[in-house]
Image (cartoon, rainbow, N blue to C red; front, side):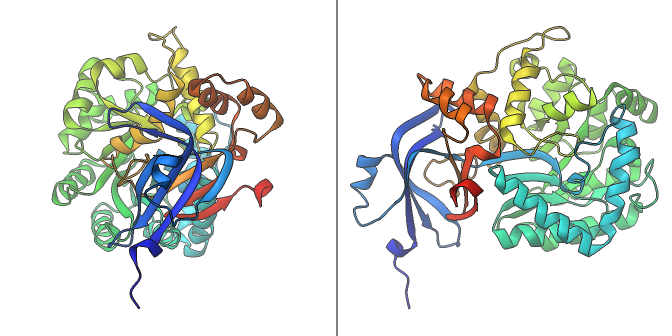
Length: 443
């Protein structure tokens, strides 16, 4: 039996929020979003815009109607640790003590496939509950952790990128890996999962201090051999860490240049934090096409410092927003955007500026997609984009309803959600044209 094109189409009616090709936010208060399953099996946006205009081209479609609500792109999280789901909210004196006291202890448990699968299932459901439909996430140094997350994401048809963590030194027993075996495992996992359905593989040296030169060199060779893969790591998060890198790699110009020396800066490379940079570092990020995953709740929680938005914008480097759970304190993109606004405003250690609500939203959707090299695929509602989106409720709580009712324009509505919002604003999360999470109050 042949399925007609009309049978593969779906439609949703609500307000629409998206970004045009110039990265300018657009909206219509009564819109129609039409999606269609492509020949490759992926659901993509076919058309969108004003309801009457779009509906005239699809008169036979019966849309799902969300009166009073808004459809927006699914959020994109540029940096998160799924094995640290149970570490969130753990107190410590700073980054390095926090890693030793909590993180490595929990990550050692992921040698157990059953544990890895249980956490992966919970983690992905939590992402979806908060409206995150694409994520670049760390696993652990155990191949079992990667397999568990890919299997859970594939079942949900998610756009997800992850990889086995590489850390062959300065790491405790239970998470420290073997140099040669780590490279063998990385390549085997990459060949198994990269490009399967909507999954991608990220070559993942944890951070320079945890990797020997041989391991970093091997990671760079894999990155050159598989140019469509991603690279993810950490850089210049904490001053103690920066000093440690200087001791370990005295020949390097800076912490960032350590990765350059091993061929780990390129398009589709994403580095978390990027706080303690100079202008040469930012120019290197820009020229190599490498992106920063700005992680404001984590940086505030661990006292790491403040990302310099003014300098990043002046340099032209790419960046987007990340929750960085479990150093980050929330899965919620609204909490992350609010923290980014606060970090931007800080003007004692750098030039402060006020990030607009539209720009904050861009950093967690289309801007993050651009940083991943996935512009035009995720993080937007333009025709051709994959059909991952959220339905937002301006009446999610009494206070949000009261504030949103007084919003005079889109900027005020977005900012009200950013300041007051959490998972309750997400009325529904839709992945590949299918509702995968619906807030309990709407069931």
